[in-house]
Length: 212
Length: 212
Length: 212
Image (tube, rainbow over all chains, first blue to last red; front, side, top):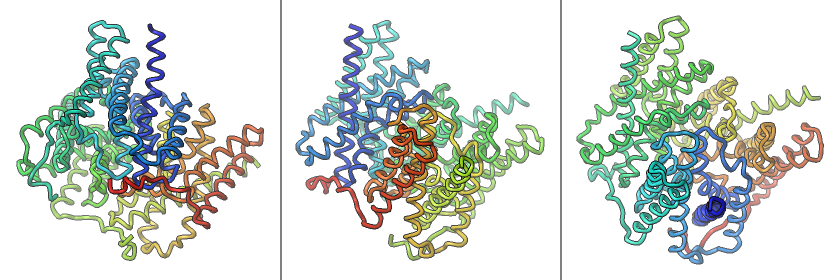
């Protein structure tokens, strides 16, 4: 069971990296970037969140010591450039659901990594959310957009829920595997609710400031 | 006296965090962000500078080990969303002066922290300025604006002056408390001069490049 | 010979910092920044890449322990503000070639630094590219532009080639000096080809997404 869970996490992690890299590469296509630009956006989207997490935690940045991440991003970028020339070929619904899966996974894994380095529960949950959302934020900042996730249906909230459930059920003495599955399921479920019912948290705005 | 100064710094620091978080949350209101976006902008503005300082210095990032910062930012954001729906309710003059106070404090505390980790005086003054201004810069970059402080009346200059005075009077064997008070007072005074007389350093521009 | 190479690298490094700082300061002139803004853009362009490299590698950030970098950036900024008021006075061709030289140098030195801290060859080549291109990327992001190098003629590709050649010829048991010269020459040559023939890698775009 332990081995099965490790294997599951290993492949799920690679799947998440591919989905996030694909999202970055497809974004690059909207801005007429050259192939190197495609790879930079794919890499930033896929590993940007984990990089910031590791830097803030003061631990070795994961992809500098596990080179297969670079390989996965490289092949995803090349694949996107060569094969998927039209984003219509990637169904939007598939991308949204796959992205929700990657978000749930990264939020829980990021929380777990911070906890395993003895950070507090609160800090660890925040680190999980950073792992899940910061890559997409940097992608949008590079492309000169206000990050979508700051406006979008229950995105970061789902990441915080995933990390929070993981911490809660770990504290309740559930096994780590069970707590992970509960955290990921909860995060995924909340995000899918946001996608299907287009639920957003109410936006915060000032009417008299919109000209500013 | 020592205890009084520590207590003063503790509460002044929290006040500075609240002011910077408020500034980030109010900015979020101009861009129709959702509540999570408000919190991200508040957090980035309030602790972004200190986070970059600690990362560059290679020391533990302060808010990962002192959780009350997250609490202060959370409650400031919720308070802003629920109560202060119109920025007119926060007088602009109050925000400017409170922000000047936070800037002076963070510049001096950032300089002191770098010095206490044995960095050079020059590096420490720069770290103080980064502590004071980087959070606001990231806030503006996320909101797709050229950072205001790169154009504004004597902003970063005031931060550099605060750190510089602190270093100078420490070298002259003043007590640390005295050097802090002198640094903060000098920084605050220069910034207030900039605000009240709208003094700016002359802008540097190329006439023949403005179309570029 | 070893001493000569060290001396060459020392002065070449300062020349590279000056060129990158000049590029940042000239960019600032297009956006009516104040003198402090000029220095920030100059600093970010000149040392931003190396700063990110050192942070990701978890080693001391180079300019915090070698203060002359700050001095070089300061004097380059002041010089630019006082003397070079019109960018026409800096021939565009000179800037492009000087920048290509800085890129080649930083790519190889960044690769070497990562290797000397026992990172893998792949990670080290990426670190070299980050050293060469990240500063210019941050400069463009601050100025609210999509980074030029993500679209430009063979820019980052030249950085990757420089690091790659250095690694390859080091592996082939060439002396470190020889491997450096080969790496720099290869990178410089490829970049100059890109400049003179205006060779770009074919852009990756989606026709049906351009309105998005």
